[in-house]
Image (cartoon, rainbow, N blue to C red; front, side, top):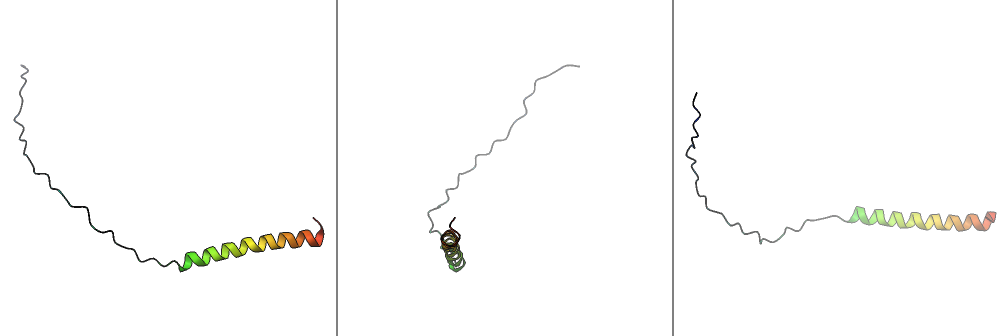
Length: 63
């Protein structure tokens, strides 16, 4: 059996590069901040209660 090095013809097609304009205005997302604000208020109130109860415990029990 005889080995032959054959190169098959490769068909290379030139394709045009399409330039896409990406400078469009970003969409503004409507966002409801009410839940985040309520959560932040609850966190601040909880921290205030912890500090107040710590001081009250220290005053009452002398710890």
